[in-house]
Every structure is written in structure tokens, then in C-alpha cells.
Image (tube, rainbow, N blue to C red; front, side):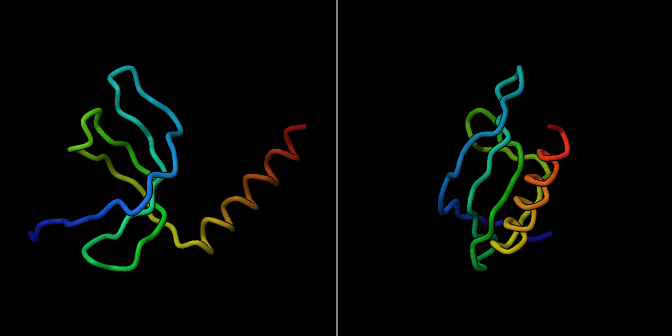
Length: 76
């Protein structure tokens, strides 16, 4: 299995933190030299380990935003 290479182009923000210090972060990451995408996953406190996550293009992120906005309207 080849090494996974990534470059965090931009840290957008932290969504949550676990009692053990892991943070669920939204970042913009380039994976294996590809074009950067939005990435949502857990990161260890020192930033050296990561959990499973999802990557989204800008259009996918906008679609998710619309979906979440619609959910909020239903909750009111």
C-alpha cells in the first residue's frame, strides 16, 4: 500500500471536540497532489493521526449547505 500524502491548504474550523481531545475539523486538503477539496474528519490532538472522513467538492459542499438549511426550516 502506498503512502498517503496530504497538504492542508486551509483550516476552515472545528465542529466538535471529543473528551480525548480529537477534533472534528473542516479543512481544505490536497490529497496525493490532486486539486484541494473540502474535507471533514477527526484529527488527533497533535494533528499526526486522522480518522475516516469525507471529501467534498465546492459544489457538493454547497448542496450539503442547502440540505442542512432545509432541515433547520423543518425543525422550527
